[in-house]
Amino acid sequence: MPLSPGDLESIGGYALVDRLGSGGMGVVFLGRSASGRQVAVKVVHAQYAQDEEFRTRFRQEVAAARRVSGAFTAPVVDADPDAVQPWMATLYVPGRTLSDTVAKGGPLRGHELRALALGLVEALRDIHRVGVVHRDLKPSNVLMAEDGPRVIDFGISHAVDNQALTVTGRLIGTPPFMSPEQFTAPRDVTAASDVFSLGSLLVYAATGNRPFDGASPYLTGYQVMYEAPVLEGVAEPLRSIAERCLDKDPAARPELAELHRMLLALPDSAAPVVSVVPGVADSAETTRQVSHAGPVQGTEGTDRTRPGHGRRGRRILVSLAAALAVTGLSIMAVRTGSHQNNTSQSSTAPASTVPTSAATVTPPPKHVRWDYQVGGAYTPPTGVQVVSRSHEDPAAPGVYNICNINAFQAQEDAEGDWDPDLLLRDANGDVVYDEDWGEAVLDIRTDAKRQRIAAKVNAWIDECAAKGYEAVEPDNYDTFTRFPKYLAAGQAKALMKLLSVHAHEKGLAIAQKNTLELVPDRASVGLDFAVVEECGEWNECGEFAKAFDNNVLVVEYTAKGLSDVCSGWSSTLSIVRRDQLIVSKGTSGYLRQTC
Image: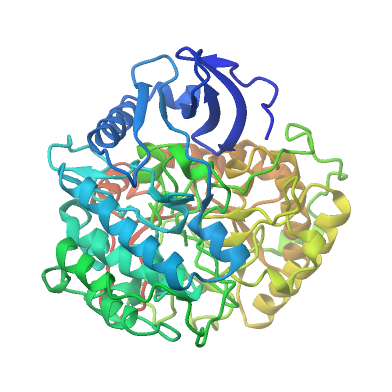
């Protein structure tokens, strides 16, 4: 796509001639050297250049990518991680991503599948022999070039001599293609983790389906750790090979030399396809080159409202976000396409006001024990007075109940439940996805569309009221921050006003979920209290506490976050730490702590 107004025209001696992709952390351009050589240039957004921790991770990415050289990787040709705006140039490799190839052409068969499998093994061999573990091998990080696949994106790779950073300990990767150890011990993954990811990737390539594909990223993570892979439609001998790669025990997986020998047995001609169900595309972008030179965020629901955790720039499960955001550029947040609307414009919708009946609304009590159960309901622990649950779960008796709904994005694989014109689309007419979670983004850019979206969401609010909930928590209020090329803050506020008016008419209080950017507007939008993830981890609790008069319910996911928020706010705010998958009590991995 063409350059946008304000884009750099050159960097490091390379003329930037086209945009290959963009996201919250930076932009990837097609560049050309003075001699005419084409490169893919990743340029970091200026604001992240001021973050020394980010710079350190970017330096590590450049170093890791430089160490890797092989026929099935895209080599670094130039970089300056210490520039005012850090950048890195890799060899430009024309070709679609594997996710795009499968989504548009269906699963691979015969020679295509065999060549892909063998090429990826050779790529991993080159990566591992220099002491690097990729950690994010997935369909959107594989380019299908004419002479074989290319593994790209070393944004969250791990080298044995990498400097340990303060944000380590968060999960990094993309749940359907992560290994079990990436969830349980992310700092200790080995080359065997990439073998597990390769097994999942080959199943996807052969069938169009992921072997682990829960209704939410949290459930997907649970499947990866504890359940057998779904291998329907995978023919022998690939089925047996995939089973070995997907062993929960890293030591039981084949090494690359053995795996190469096994893959040589794959048929070189197409055979009849059995039980193929295409259409479940990788939850990353499907553009031809967006992932070409940039780290990608990974992604947290079919009909069930997905728990709204980690939505503030993806700070939890799918690199769960901030880890990836800090690691590299979030360039795969949207599908390719130029923006056709002015993203800086404010909503033209009339400003709604909170009706007088809002006086009857009761916000949750302040500074009480509470629990965050959006990943699965269970009996509230003793002393808990407030609970947040998915809108599909019943309210808990005897406590104040908050109903969690997804209001700004469609549930994963549920975009068919929405009128096609209510899904945000790029210039090519392709639906724009929040790739972290595989969710289609709703088009909130006009008043007419916001009214129709609100009508559907308000029906869910009615269900919450009927079930006995006292408040509602619309998730993804911050979607506009991840898609600034398409959406504006004023549009998000306009939709939220419609929801707050309806919630108040039903006697429900309404929460602001995360979205620090819009805290100054909370009163005009009609928001009564806040549900905030990781404000201790990110030192933001004070701003929420001030804006909402201490009526803030905090959920943390790390020991450090809990310690930080407890040290400063234990006598003021409602605080709980939950496990990163937010599983039900009695389920393996369950964790709940308070100050």
